[in-house]
Length: 145
Image (cartoon, rainbow, N blue to C red):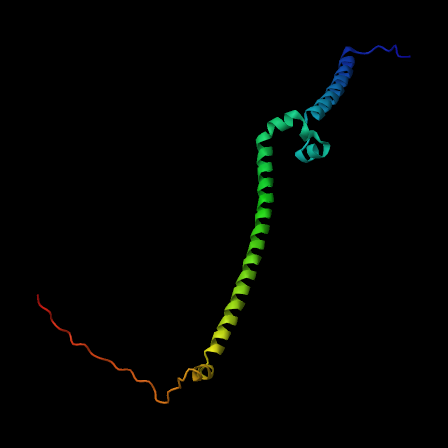
C-alpha cells in the first residue's frame, strides 16, 4: 500500500524534482515556439508570405525585384546589341564587296590598251615621246608703293 509515511525532506525533494521536470518541458516548448526558423525553412514552408515577414523585409524585397528587372533588361539589351552588330557587319561586308567590284571595274576600264582603243575612234594617238614638264621661274619683283 501507498500509505507509507514520508519525511518532509523526501517529499520536498520529490516535488522539486517534478517541478524541475515540468519547467524543463515548458522551457523546451516555449523555446520551440519562440525559435524562428531559418530563411530557407521559411521559404519552403511559405511563411515568408506572412504579413509580418513581408513588412519587415519590404526594402530588401524591392531591392531584389529591382535587381531581377535589371538582369532581365540587361539580357534584352545584350540580345539587341548583338543583332545590331551582326546587321552592321553584314552591311560592311556588302559595302566592301561593292568597293572591290567598283575598283576592279575602274582598273579594267582605265587600262592603257583599253584607252588607246577607245581614243582611236576620235583620232587621238598614243604619244611615243615621253612627256616633258616645263617649269618657268618667276622672278620676284619688288613693288614699292
